[in-house]
Length: 350
Ligand code: SAM
Image (cartoon, rainbow, N blue to C red; front, side, top):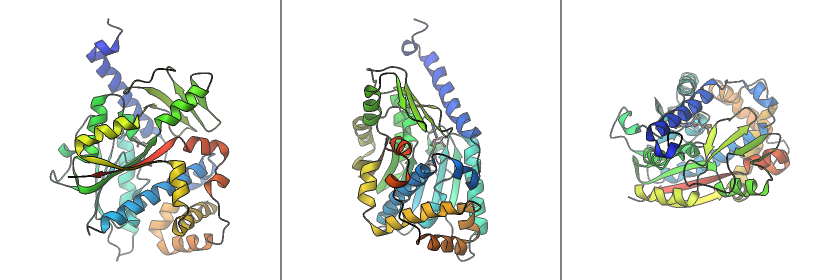
């Protein structure tokens, strides 16, 4: 049947290509806006919360890796515009490889890195970096790396892995890219929507979609959830509006075994938050991150790289601010959106 995509590989391939192009062009056209613009966003607290969570996750993993190694190499898979560059800087890594399907994002990421390097204190040794534009669900990064023998200590895949669950082959290629060049004892860490949460909310809804004023999720079908290619549209205040795919976690865990990966933990954002906020340092970081919002004229990352002292000063001042925990700060709608996600950590066994 000409219309049956499953029985027509060429057509399926064309559909997949269209989808990849859609993802790339969507992220390519997202405008880089200043902090002032971002402050107006209804999802500002949610962005801050997600950033806090990634900072804790990345910080903890780097600390663990550093117990064994001095020079730490990281792969940022689906790096976007480089939202985590400051976290890598703070974690004193030695080398970073950034890869993303969206060429414009990769360029912006490289630009940010160059600015950071140019403006840093002469005594600070900033990590070296390499930038790759590739569809990581279809192309092998090993073929594109400057040093084909390169090994990583950490692969970080933040809010990206779900794009690969379109087909088994794509999910496997993405996993291969994430894990094949990890050293034994290295980590694959990330954040991705929780399929249980998505399906639970869908089943509770009386239509094919659910959400609120900040996010909406629309499935094509209700009641049938194929392991691959189970597409839904995720819409988040103009931030993401491209098709995504359900990641059934037990399958992901099973597939990762092919690359000798052992699941260290999987936690919902809420579980992660509850556990990590007990730590005083993490609580302080949360205060600082939300209090820095009070400096709308200053672009935080710009401030941090141009004038680290002033940045520290701003952070210091913010310690006097009220403790603003996400459940109090995030609106109910923002919390509903962010609580869809989970955090995962895998370790390479051999
Ligand atoms: N990791 C960044 C962060 O946390 O800020 C960006 C996250 S953004 C929600 C998702 C990113 O995944 C986008 O930059 C997008 O271009 C990238 N992406 C989607 N599909 C991809 C693919 N097949 N290969 C590589 N990158 C992909």
